[in-house]
Length: 271
Image (tube, rainbow, N blue to C red):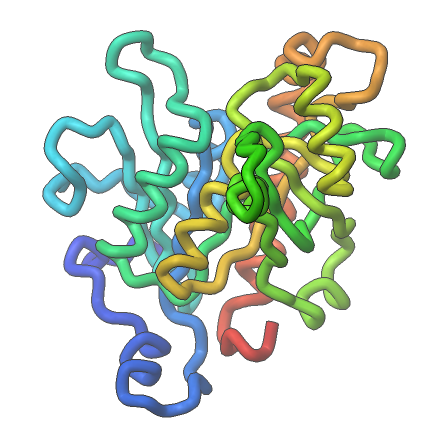
């Protein structure tokens, strides 16, 4: 296991070359893009996969704070992209706007065979979620894009089923649930109603945005979310999130590692 010396050049993925030739995709997955919102979530994976920070910013627009870690783990080229710190306020660039932008730019730059959006989320105890649970999401939707006009309302919700991974689920001990995404950590009555309508077990600030971009660019995407706080519990969300972030990130790290190990040597159709 060692960082790939040629990751900056980013060789085309075998799966992409095969697909572009009009042949059924039977090549093993070669290039994986991991999109992750917070440095605390990213750091253990950077260490685990021995990724190195790429100092060449030329593949991204000038001035953006986005950070790329890259390397080769087993037979996989891994690009882990963190949106970086907000230039003005110095906090993690969380939320749907940053997630959409970095996902789009990274897919364009690195041509991944698979996108993995890994991160933490709130969970609903009414749907069986507990602190530290890691979910592979089955569907995503937005809960804060309210457009009360026929058809536009459906566009605002943006409900999508995620890429199906029956073999991965059979192999790994992960829960399955739907994810609802919005740009606020707290939950207004309007948001709560929409989340219930989305039948969501999880609530985050990036997933559906990443799903929208991946779907737009026809790249399979999977979503791994670890529960840091119980949205319908008794503790304030922000307090519980900060209290559990580090320990839950360890569970997320383990799950992502298991998924990467499973993916290695397999084709998309094997998942």
